[in-house]
Length: 256
Length: 329
Image (cartoon, rainbow over all chains, first blue to last red; front, top):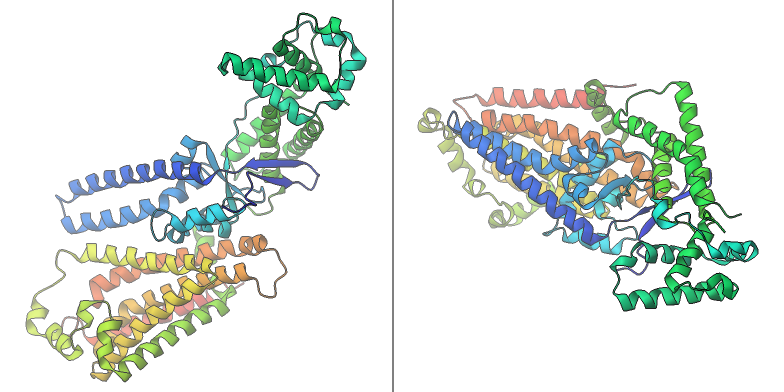
């Protein structure tokens, strides 16, 4: 694996806005491929059954149709589905992946065709060895087909609006009784530390009791090191309650 | 400045939902032309959501919200900044795209022909030096029989009466079509090895072709050879050369000699031409497969050689006219 392999691809628009795609790892891509291989197997098996029935009328033409259908399904499966489903196949839908243009533009038919035709090389000598190696070695986890077509495979993000109520419910917050300290905390808390705190709060019920106590103790200690609130504000607050109060301060809302 | 996130979401959610709805509609109907008012609204929503995303950049916020806005902005960006027209399957334009793409990259085609001819020369040389090399160079058992013997057998009265392909003609044609299409696509795909793979594949094809031709011509069976190969070969061989042309175009875009455009841009520019050439070659190979199974395998006295050769030459002339003249702007 190359050291410089990225986990996301960042694109800056001419307006100066930056957005990113989470790149799919070779492992998730392999999972999607297994599902797709199964789907292709089922489709060709279905075609085989239909041609078997047709063989009762004319064996020669039935064999010819099967040979052509087998080829068309193997080559056309990825092309048709990725084009019709905006970069997704059955496997990519199941695993939550999507083929996107590496520069953030709309995916073109020529790109879809090219990346699928180049599978012939990526599949060599067996089980996508060339493509897998290219994925591991390329910075954006691209197989040769992706490099030639200018595409990447990204993880799909759910277009749901986040549930803010669960994260920072608007309740009484003793820290907000000291607005100057609250403002100082907002300015000092780094996005990374707040992000960790948010994840810790949202997953708190899944932790072992001791690990939960330890985690929130460390988080509370970190936030206390940034700003020291008077004892009256922290009285009776557990470490976990303190961290949640900090989040309400950072995100706003709540009553002081 | 610190934002009040719930209030921020409450104020902006309507715009995000509206942009999401507009994008979903555009993605479902890519060919739909938006009226000016809708374009202006889309642009406004894109700028508003971009501004929201920029505001979030400076604050410690929930990653899910950022991911949601990034997803919206990236989708809107791809719709607004894309300058290539959405692909529409139009048969007339599709048919014309093939000869136009071929003519745009004549250098790559010449290289493809040159490498194949070099292979042919090697095949001729190998057989000329030692005829026993035939067993090494030719992978098909029916080509190892002495040409005179094969011609005598296939022109015999029994062969004329008995159709050896009876009951398997269609499946034989299908196998030829799929196999040759795979070889052509492989010639394109191997272009990704900076052209080395394409070069080897074309050279090897040329070696086989040169060895077969030498074997039959030296044995005095040139007419049989022309009558056997021309009906399908006049289409099949150019189709594989077109695959090689596509491979060299791809290699050229990867290498980018004397071109200051970034590699991604070069590949993006040639992608539609590659697809047009390979699709055209695949269609040609369907025809060639049918001809090889239904015409090429029948020799004099069933089909006179003159007729077969004339048919092959007519096909070659038609293909040359199509690639050289059709769709000239």
